[in-house]
Amino acid sequence: QEHFPQTEDATVRDAYEAFNQVYEDNLIRVEADELTYHLHIVVRFEIERDLIRGDLDVEDVPEVWNDKYEEYLGIRPDTDSEGCLQDIHWSHGNFGYFPTYSLGSVMAAQLFEAAEDDIDDLDAKIADGEFDDLQDWLGENVHRHGSRYETNELVKRATGEDFSADAFLDYVDEKYGELYGI
Image (cartoon, rainbow, N blue to C red; front, top):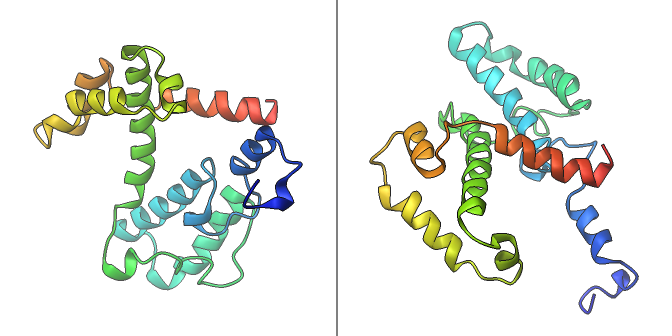
């Protein structure tokens, strides 16, 4: 508030709600909120899959993209730059990368849940800016293995559970359920 005097009446809760808002006009993936971001990924995955299978012609991508945005996000891009041309991946021939962003979020939630089970008062430590225990846990359970294990095996070793979206869904339900009263 010192640097933004116009927020002098804002509470910590006001800031939390503003930073975690789910946007209705969410056209650009890299500007998307934490929830709808993954719908952006689904659109890209489905288009990539259909292109690779031969079920979609390149010239039809803009229309299919816009239709999927309308179906999944409730909005329709006005231009291709707001739509299918907003990312650089495809122009570089990089196909199949988008799903890894969502997989990373899902895996991070599962790893964090396991770290919370193993580290006393982890949330309080993070709130106090103390990350050493979490870094040590990640070093011991994830980083030291490098690429020794396939992803699923690494997750199982680190968490004791098979790779699953359960922790991510619990996180989303808790956070956004509380924020939006659902």
